[in-house]
Length: 303
Image (cartoon, rainbow, N blue to C red; front, side, top):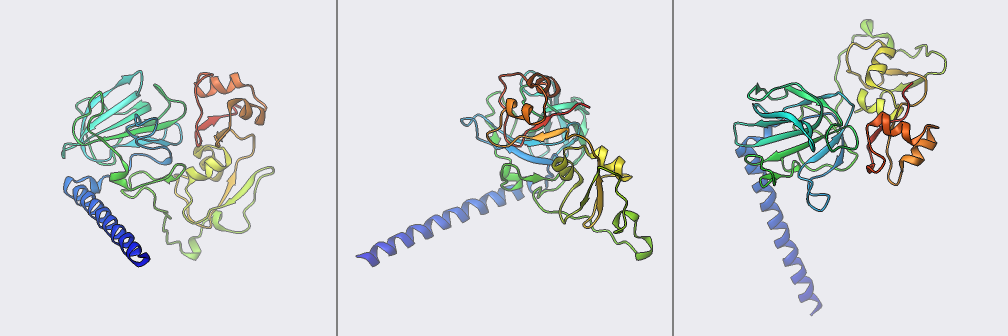
């Protein structure tokens, strides 16, 4: 009898596995067939929310990142809408040749206009905090068909780019946005730049950070609460390219950005940085009753 019971469990498990494999192979085949398997991710940052949350009403994914950082079109297409909405804020819609439509909301600025043709990976705007938003992020939607008011054709972006987790770092212009990347540079011994030497001189009160494999300038800026432009200026960088083992001088001064942790409140964060709640509200363009969410970026110092 026990053997019989175990046999039944094994059969049910195998059937479940087969159904799962059929579902995922079907999804992969659909992605390949529809052309979405070559799409690129729209922004650098980290995942702050998923499709289907908020009682099933959240029909996209949210990517937190640096205010004003570029947002890209996932594929070639034509801009079907580019306007300011009370909910989406500055928003861009792009219709793609395969019939899909993508939406990019809460932008700081729009870089394209309605009817304009855009290429894959072309900048269409900048990440912002406009509309019904509680922090700098991109709200990104995918529709298998035309966007409708009730978002009848919305699909989970994870079906296109693979599943991610809250707080996970993502990279723009990649089809696999979660991969760990390292810039491979061949540097001759004679041409080795000074930033890789052990005798680097660090100005008083500044910190020194040694770049680990897979780190990005943006990610390091979030750890220390400084902007990427500050890091580039302090270290004489012409762009955001960094490599493993590189030594970066972290500018001194008060931390200017705080990433919200689970359970934190505006009052607690204000006390932590010795500022007022009113200052936080003004600096971050939020209302007192607006919720704050884990991984949300808050400006905590305007000096």
